[in-house]
Length: 239
Ligand SMILES: Nc1ncnc2c1ncn2[C@@H]1O[C@H](COP(=O)(O)OP(=O)(O)OP(=O)(O)O)[C@@H](O)[C@H]1O
Image 1 (cartoon, protein in one colour):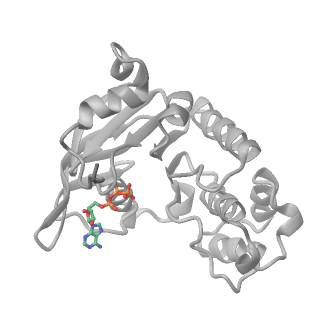
Image 2 (spheres, protein in one colour):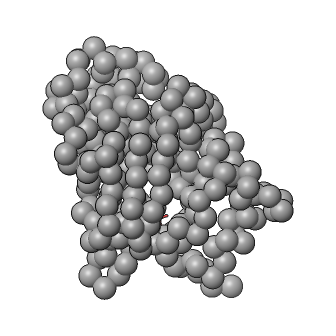
């Protein structure tokens, strides 16, 4: 279980995440949706201990992330698909992560297989396409076979076959009892992948409800989203 209780993150005078409270139960895909600058990435970074909360609490299985002994076996995360060093071979990147987390080396071959990267495992990341980097990021997230997955825009750069594969993977993880949080701008995709939605804007949670409930009375999740976030966008294009 992942839980945020009045979690707040300020950067100087800017409040990126403002008293956010929610719980992510196992067995469910939750979509974190919000406009640019809403606080989605900061929320994920707070859960992963990459940002320290200015207030409130962020707990993974009842304790802060930094207290987890082998974090990759508790929470797998995709925050930036290109986080691997460009000069490294894909397999070495994963081996290095595995070694630091007490994960057996054979798991590296498994996640390469799951993400379809076995054939390019010995190639250097600098030659990878955006979609391949994304698959490598997902491979890293799966390395510890964690019960919880946090995925920031996991479909970025994936081709149609990749999107279908990722969609199935995400759903299967939750169906198998996993906790999955997916942050995305892709409403149509989210309505196919997730059961539950957290709508965030200007650092505040505007809705925490089943997607079917959020969508009711609207033609689509996108319409519901615009209805909820109207006037809350950080950035507005000129007309
Ligand atoms: N390290 C930082 N220093 C200063 N401000 C930051 C920092 N990180 C985030 N912010 C600000 O906090 C707010 C929330 O940013 P965040 O990246 O969490 O939004 P987001 O919802 O992920 O946006 P996007 O959809 O554009 O990726 C933004 O106004 C951003 O400029």
